[in-house]
Image 1 (cartoon, helix red, strand yellow):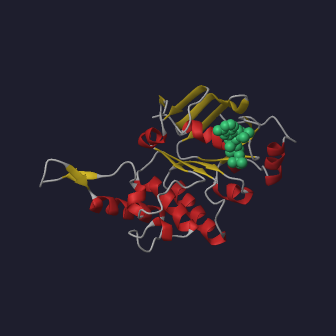
Image 2: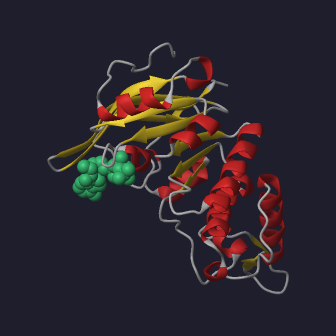
Image 3: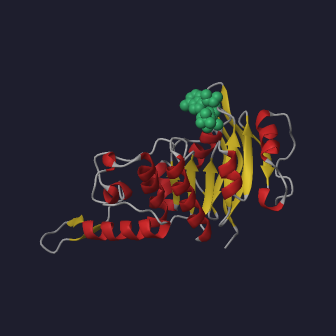
Length: 259
Ligand SMILES: Nc1ncnc2c1ncn2[C@@H]1O[C@H](COP(=O)(O)OP(=O)(O)OP(=O)(O)O)[C@@H](O)[C@H]1O
């Protein structure tokens, strides 16, 4: 089994004349936590959308868990083992926690009373509880609809999907952007738990403290291109260095010192 869980080569996305993503070469090792940083409009979300099947790339390759992949949509990516927590949470307000977690991939069981399969509510509740426990998320009552939960709780539910489905890669696009201090701390704790469990993670974030706290490596995007690859665990890069790459004051750290 290769140590690389995700690799992109020459990944490019043009929206008409807008070159949102240009020739992105990127690798993520199994169990590694990498942050993607960059100014507004730098191409971070575009990069995530090409990996998660939300959009079809203009060109380039994506290799996931050893296979070159062309996801037709987000469900395809999910089935392959990529769980994404988007900025817009993609949770259904009127549904409860298990229904949200299993939306689009409901668990069914054989119905002895008829010829059809039926929804396995008990099984889904059990798996939900296990997923929440694994990530340390505390939700008072999983049967409550999502609409009655705080922003932080909702975010935790979205993240708990990762543990429930034993995904191979979690991608979070600014998971704490809309959260308060306590809720942010809760989400960050879950990310630490995922690290301890060996989960691979891509974290899109503007929060320098958070990134230095949580990840092994920072990738900086600028004007659609990867302009820096900074191994922050094994070097003395500072937040100032990262800002210099984000603004373009510094250049030339693409895949420096990393295979
Ligand atoms: N559907 C689209 N159609 C046309 N242009 C787009 C589309 N989506 C993104 N863009 C453009 O592509 C560029 C990259 O956008 P993207 O959303 O990836 O940036 P970002 O780094 O995620 O920014 P932010 O931090 O603000 O979320 C921007 O110039 C944006 O206007």
